[in-house]
Length: 111
Length: 116
Image (cartoon, each protein chain N blue to C red):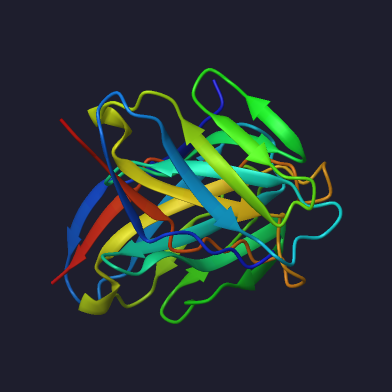
């Protein structure tokens, strides 16, 4: 599992676009980039996954530059219900098959 | 519907009284894992299993046991619970058909355990 670095927290307001960037300098050739969202007292849930360039679904977009050393999760027009912790995972597991989550980014959306 | 089901969802128990938290998935996933989440500490992996009869320690295995006798079930056992095991526990599962990367992790709804 590649080491990832995300901001600890971000603030935004309803209706704004939010971009959360994740750095993963040691990403491997066959690693995918996956983002999860966790609401308080709930298990994380899958948001979006990509390998390169741009991926978009009904919830978010994921931008991955050509060198793949970082990625940006974009949430268009956030609402209060988007307040959550967002985790970036790169790759599947480390050599011991552990599946470890980083600290995530705590997003607070204000009215 | 793809599901990871944990039981119980909420439990208050006393120190030393053995308890088991069950976890079942209906997606035929090879990989299953247990996490605990405490305020300010994020998700910490307790144990994981690559397949039936194959289990290994995560980052915080002390005080816990697991077993994987069937592919769909992965119970977490606290032989002698202590107050420092009071936490929110999540079970998770994932397929391994895409070389570990590129798969989606599915989480259960969580189990609140309080040990007094």
